[in-house]
Length: 533
Image (tube, rainbow, N blue to C red; front, side, top):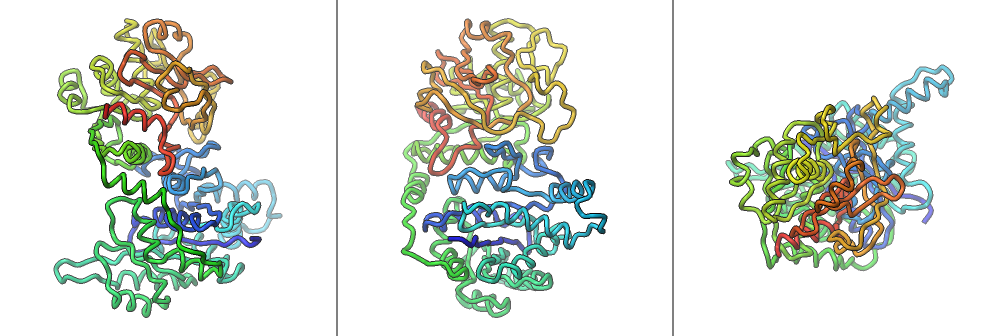
């Protein structure tokens, strides 16, 4: 297929309706029909990337294999499609403007007045087409962040209008996701917000091809007919997206509603027999019919916003289903854990995970959690800073290195068991300057980690500045905390574990970024198994 087809997903009425899930679900269905699909997110904020955003502001910062710090929706894309994304799959307004301003500074515009149209819109269109270049994909789905009517989204909406005009109706279609609220006082679902949202889109010059209606309750055919009539959309192109118990049901619901068939028809692409989605359905069956149940404590510092740990939560869903186990994850603020209450706070769990993070706030609670899990033989999983806290705890209480710490927290510590990486010491800027993306790791065959992966070489994604200090390598190994995963190029310690513990593993990388529905991450699968055990 020579011509790439473009699908744009916009949102109206309110934010957080689930454009990312609808995009990922559609992509999954098209992929199951044999089409090569990728998804892109256009984010309207002016930050260059989400890497410098506080997790309270934007949820988790997701990291791709090629080292891009991106929006958490890219995590959904990968988890649904089982295909890695890259730098090109997430674009922010900040990056667009940065690129245009750099060109202006170099004189690329030959002294012309630089304007939103055509310069900003041309750069947006270039980024959209970049993902579809090289004959890798049949269909590119582009999700536009924010809500129609937002001032920040206007350049993106205008770019879509221009592309629709340039590429033609069959090569460029728009799906508009809106809300149909239910008023319990009158017992009615109201379509007026959707009508206003479509009117707003029409004012920008775009007629949506498909409407997806988010709703708490099923919509009858009369409501769909009314929406179709008032919004100038075919009846079959009005799709209901009713609330479900898990996001992983959405592809099945969209298949039942015919979203993929409608999209293919509008793009003039052949529609073969219905995709079986066998593995997906098996996953859902296991997810809904568990044979075991466990409770895991997730100790972190951003727990007020669970989206800050989105990939970890989803990894537990994937690994739980594979183990046929229902997992109740309780989020515990690390600042709440003290010497006096650590036993009461953690005694009811089958396992604990100490989450990643930055800075000194709440670190003492994470260190106490690692100590409690180690001394009480409770399965422990430390990720990034979580691993570092386990190392600090072991240094203090087993090696008796008094005041041992990370130089991130105490740069004057006598025992810097966690220290700044050599190449980070001259870095001043914060944006995109950490050790980012996929790095190799060689695993010791005599380890629980090897039992999980069943291979000696892996590639995992990183996002950190500080590392295990190899000066203390032998001290730890000789006393029972063994470095079992090493980066072959730099010699950095990537994985530590305590062999005589039930399951005690700390990793410097982020395994949660690699877990998908079809391929749950081996370490999460092994950890859950140990918690059941």
